[in-house]
Image 1 (cartoon, rainbow, N blue to C red):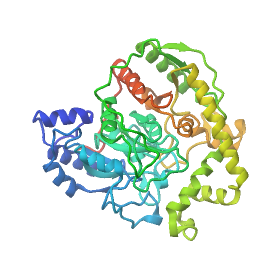
Image 2: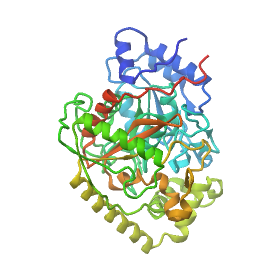
Image 3: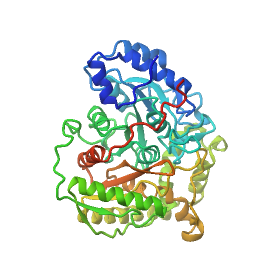
Image 4: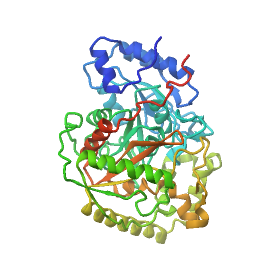
Length: 472
C-alpha cells in the first residue's frame, strides 16, 4: 500500500492511461489514508462499491477511475442523505442528483461522502451528527464550511477531488482556509435537479481542487441545461481545452481588499493586496482605482433561506426544531417572528440595490480583487468569530454587521449570481490566505485563465504540508 495520489486529478488520469498504476490501486491508497486520518472529513464511505467501479473503470473517460468525494448536501442513490442533521439521520437518497449522474458518466469513482455543517448553514464544519472536521494545515482550526469535509479531504491528501456547493461562500471559503482553488460559477451553470432548491437563487454547485485544470474538467463534465432545473444555463463547451487561450492583456482590475463593506485583518489585507498586484502584473492587467458602493451585508438577507428550509424539513417542522443546531434554530425562529411582507420587501430592495452596485463595479473593472476572508481559519468547533485580533467588531460596527462580517466578502457574488474564484495567495501564521477575484456574469472562463496565470507564476502547494495526515 502506497501513499494516495498527491497530484491533481488530471495527472492521476494521465498516470492511469500510462499504466503507472491502476484505478483500484489508487483507490486503495486513498482508503488506507482515510482510515488513518484524524481530519474527520467524511460522513459516509462506500468502498466496496467504489472498488467494483474502480476495477471496471474506463480510463479513457475524463475522470476515468478517479476517486471522488461528494458533499453530503448532494444526493447519491443509496447513500445517507442527512444534510448533516440529526433530524434526518436515517434518511437514504433514492436517486442521484443530476450533477452526480454526470460525474458517473465522466468515469468518476464515488468513494465517500464529505462532511458539511447542518444544512450548510455556517462557515465551519462541526455537527452533532458527525462531529468536528479539521483543517490539515492546523488541526485546531476549521477547514471552513459548508464544503468543509471536501476541503479537508482534498487539501489533506485523502482524495484528489471532491464536490462542493456555494450559497454564500461555501466553496470559496473552504478553498481560502485550506489552500485550494475554488470557483463559484454563475448561477445555473450546474443544474441542481431533480428536486433542487429554487429560492433564494443564491446556491450553486461546483468542486474544490488542487489545480485550475481539475475545476475546468469538472465543469466540462457537469455544466449544461437540465429541464428539471428550469433556471439552469445552456451548455458551454471547452472549459479545459480553452484554458490559456483567452487574451487578458490590457483588461482592467480593481484591487479593493475589503470590497468597501468588510472588516479585514491588517496583515491579511497586506498579503492579499500584494498577491493581487503580482497577479495583475503577471497577467498584463491594467489596475484601475474603483470605489465600490455595495450596501453593507446584514442578516436580513439570510431570512430568504428560511422558507425553503421549512420545505426541506417537511413533517419535521415545527415538531423537531428543538433537535436542530443553535444557528439553524435561530434562523427559523427569527424568520417566524420577523419575516413579514415588509421584511421580504426590504430584502428585495437590498438585492436590487446590490445588483445595481455590482453592475456599476463591473462597468468600471473586468476583475475585482479582494480577500476571501477577513482573517485566517478560526477554531475547528466554531462558532465563526465576531472579532479580529485586537478588535471587537460588535462594539465597532454593531451586532448585525459584525456577525455577517465572515460572509461579507463572498455573499455579494451569490446574491448577484455572478462568478468568483478563490486562489491560494499567501500564508499567515502557517495558514492559507485566499485571494478572491470577482467578475461579471458568464465570465468564468476568464477567471479560470487568470487563476491559471496565478498557478503558473505563483504556484501553491497542492496539499497541506505532511499530508496525508496519519500516514504510517
